[in-house]
Structures are given as C-alpha cells and as structure tokens.
Image 1 (cartoon, rainbow, N blue to C red):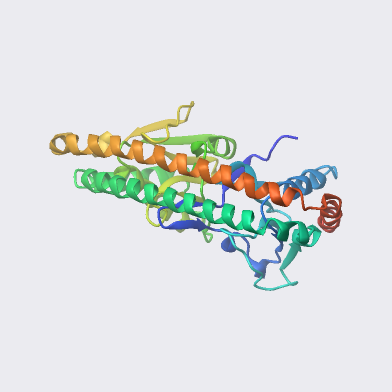
Image 2: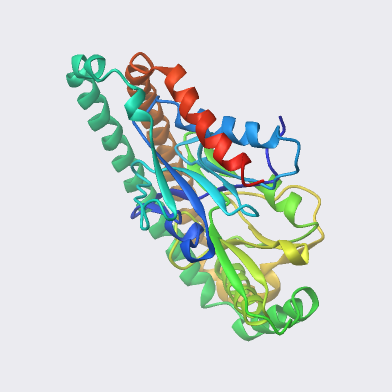
Length: 362
C-alpha cells in the first residue's frame, strides 16, 4: 500500500538534545482521540501503527493520513495521524515521551508491554542495561558533533548576515506573500514539523512531501543560510498574519531560530532552502538566489574562513552520522531481546481493538 503524501519527522536529535512537537500536534479541546503506545524497543510499535493505518484505509473510505518517521531510523514510524478524524497514534516512549493530559477524555495508553514475557527480559537484564547505556552514549556523542557543526554554521551565518541587504529581503517577502498568500480576513494557524533530520543514513530531507503538498515550490539557493532564513521567517509571519495555515519546518541544527522549509498546502505553495548540506535538485516553480541580497565584495575577505567552516562542518556531520549509525546498531540489539519475549498474537488483538474503535468513527 502506498504511503500517505504527508510524511514528516515530528522530532529529531539536535545539538541540545531531542526536540519534538508531539504534545502540540493535537488539541484536546477540539475533540482529538490519541492512542499513546508504550513498550520497549522491538515490541512492534511501528508495525502496530502502520497496520492500523492499513486496516483503516482498507475500510473503503478515503482517509487522509500523515506518517511521522523516526529520525533514529527513518524506516520506522513514531506516529500516524488522521487529521480529518482528529485521531492519532504515537510512540510515547523515550526520547519522545508523551503522557496523557486528559486520560480517557483524550488520550488512551496502549500498553504493548502487557504482551511481553517479563521473565525472559529479566533473564537478559545485564545485556539489556549494557545495550541501553551504550545506545545513550552513542547518541550523546552524536549530539556533540551536531553541536560543533551548529556552532560553525552559526558563525558562517553571522558573517553572511553582516553582508546582507535585509530591507531588500523584506521587500521580496512582502511581494511573495501578496502573490501567494494574500489576506483572507481569517485567523492564521501553524503546525511545527521537521522535514529534515540527521539520521544513521545521513541527512534525510522528505522532499516528496513538499512536492506532493505544494505544486508550486520556491527554492532559495543559499550557501550560508542568512538571507534564506530571514526570507522564510518573514513569509511565515505574513502568511500567519494574512490568515493562512502554515507548516513550519525548522533546521535540526538550529531548531530554535532557523527555518528550512515552509509549506502552505491550502495555497499550494512551499518554500525551501537549498545549500551545501541538502540540495533541492528537482524541477521547481522558481529559484531565488541569495546572492541577489548579498554584498559579494564585502563578503570576499571572509571567503577563506567560510571555506574552512564548510569543510569542518562536512567532517563533523559525517562523524555525527557515524555515531547515529552506531546507536542504531546497538538499538537493533536491544530490539532482539524484546522480539524473543513478545506475544505478537496478543499485540494483534490490541491492534484489532484500536482499529475497530477508529473504524467506528468513519
């Protein structure tokens, strides 16, 4: 079965630790029903969510869904959302811990741990602890390399920012907003996601989502991220002010203050940065080059330093990916202990129960 058009990362590893948007991805006051799945690695959480999605779609009705992938294993799911039904299933275990705010009235805990033979797990207690601690250590090392990369990227961004015509960027943003997301008289809204992540397979950008949801894609070609970030921040502000729904996707290396992608699905338009670390090499509606906003003569004396930063970041990110891959290998060992202890027939019965509850709402 083909996956949904909308696929994101709801959280990812960053220089400061795991950053996720799971708690804000649903609003209890709007009548959401959320299934929080709890259990250890290898107990079938991702398969559980995927098969619920398959079973719901097999009911015969067209059901809009959103896949939320795991940045530590981009082939595994951290969540599945059915936005029109106001239903979601989330992996609520570390590092993306999610606890009920309104137990029973909004969230329901699905305990796959109740399907495990705990005695088998106790028999492997020493090995499980060692693997768990080793996995955490690899993630800690990964964050150190991400932090070093982020520091150098921020240095380059500051250098480029001092040579950037900010007023020209703001004028361009106003023209784009007037054309693509004019005032509606309504109140704007925002979802936060990650469209990119540093994973064991390298930097992954889910461009297929951008292309599927946004027929018109603007690419901002920006070597240093200064002009592009300011342009995206202003377009985001204007789109919200004009009453549109915005999906804002931050940079995993600077999640607090740098945007990489903006999607306005209702308008059919998206904006994405393209640079040394991820190139938008596909046909797009329009490309905007940051050089048009940059004083190249003022930037010239800084080229050597910028070149050094770029080379160093490339090496640091490579080491971060290596650490993430080592963490994934250890995590696979952790999963092997649970696989041997799980009663997957019991897991299927829980899944059928959840599926029946969702189907009843179709």
